[in-house]
Image (cartoon, helix red, strand yellow):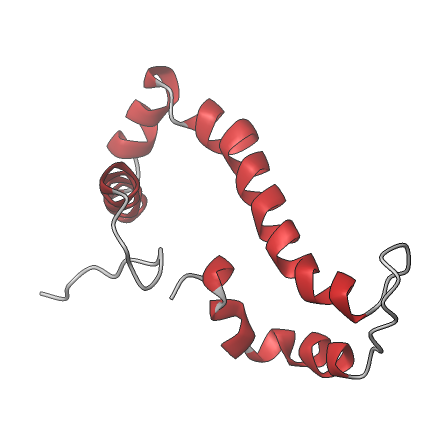
Length: 104
């Protein structure tokens, strides 16, 4: 499961956050940063992160002037980039964006 699709819940790095959220009271007042705020925060974070990635990284790096150097440079990085582009183009449901080259 992708990190932004609740895969982050299973990562040890987020355990302190999840433990802290369970102790925050639900005050019922939307103007206060109560339990409801912190439950929605991860979704807002990943949405904003993806928007910024698309605007500042993908849009600028994946141009004809730059992508040719990425593909023609380091073979491992080129292989990973091309796999990522295929998955993005197909909008496949994948378990992660990390691709491993088959040994041999």
